[in-house]
Length: 442
Image (cartoon, rainbow, N blue to C red):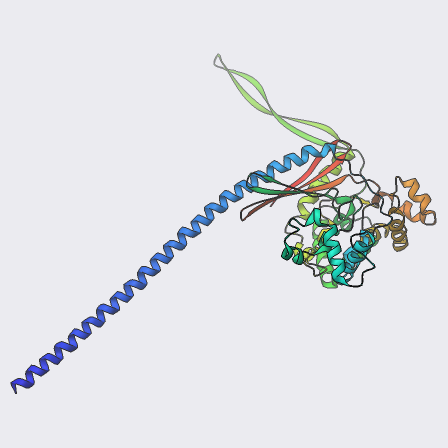
């Protein structure tokens, strides 16, 4: 009996010991999990804080570089004189926006062969590829001894269809890239008079309202937008037009201006002289020139067109799916309140929208595109003489068109590390006189 009790006590002791060991092991595992979680959380927070601090540093550098580049670009604009070039043997840029990617690549290949980039007599594409790589080697392939890089190199990526000024449309000059501190800066200058003025869709004149609507719809349909998107944009523009109408004709006007100033007056009370100031209101007439009114309207609508009242996602939606091209309605639309279209630099659908106000839009656009490739039009008289059969339609459209661009945008982008800063400046240029219209920082 005693032996049985001893064995029972030993069993209970062994069970109790194993139980305590299991509890210790469980507590240890829990502590390890808690410690691991704390370490992971702490390291994640430290890493996130480090990334935030680095981003702030990068963005500060990018913003500083962007602002410095803006000052440089504005200072350089006085000496910028855009010159139109003759392009008789070059594919015209006017219809590139409507080409599918396959047609676009075929056009590039044909242009490359005709321009001497490739040997058009070669049957094998591999030979043309090697010829083109060889011909562009100095400009675009950095290491000619690296065969793998040459095999990965796309020769047609270096072939660009010239625009009216030489660089691809809508650039006025070749984009400039340079290093500024730790940031890479890119400056692009675009011709705003080559784009469809969004303000035309807000014209309230009953005599041209129908034509303005048709021109806007022609532009949108060319860009592949469906009826629902067009109706949605027209509703948004209607709300903007209710705020203020968009005008093309301006005359000198006078406005009543009230100015308030304080005039001193002296009062005497009980032999003591005190001074106090009483408000004095003056009413005067101020004359405002057409140029000042245009500048005021431009700045006003530039703000509205870049506000939440316009759904830019619809406009920025790609009209052509491509990795090498950026085609969308927003690219061809002037959202800075420009008023006229330069017939020497506008693509086909913008020309058709401009000449819809006079009729024969398609035929006039065809003739302009054909003739300006050889020699840009210098004045309105030359345009009327060259297209004599459409002189009446051209006369009706004169206030919508121009032959020299005066409205430009400067896009400055600075990248430092993972941070990016951008500024877009809309300016008007008349000779060496440069006037800033609006600025948007991103």
